[in-house]
Image (cartoon, rainbow, N blue to C red; front, side):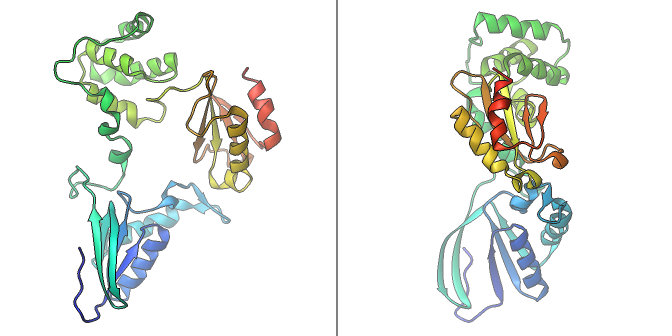
Length: 292
């Protein structure tokens, strides 16, 4: 809890560590105020850190954001309270009592770089994969076991060859089934936690089932301003599936990406490895028809 005395004090609380919150904190800190910068996410930067370009100038988002992140990170007058949320505010202008809940990180803050990868790839979210004491042999369908064993037989070694093994399994099943990962751990004598850390780190791997054809709609700045959201909504209606989901027949999955590197052809949609540029809403049925 941050408590103030009855007299007015020269401290400021800024909520949200996006580009606006960081700039406000820097301006106040340079003016001599003590600043408490509260951010609910594990790291500062906000939504802008997820963008490639900024509208309407198409400037590099990180080129704009990174200097402010560095300045906020090292400024002595700015106390950063990340992974924290405000629970209550009491008092009056110039004299507030603010109660802030700081959530457990389960990492050493002194060693944390603020990358946020620990949140995205937390093993607790995939507890079904973790080894349990006394667990017996992996229960796997015979057809899947034969395919996985065939892949494993092509690779000699241990943990150093896990990436190409996972790549082939992902290609074979279009995702990484828990049973398949368990079989890899069992045969190669590699802890399942190690396999999961690798599988969850690379975007090329999927821990959830995907359709035979994966549709990705770019929602980066260039595509967004040219109607990417309307195209995404059209695919959602045509397929009757939400973003991140798979159709009932298993033919299509629908995803979004921040950038595909084809801004000159925006809006852009990909289906598997095929790229479609200058897409509009009337083209969605034609695109789907190519993958019947």
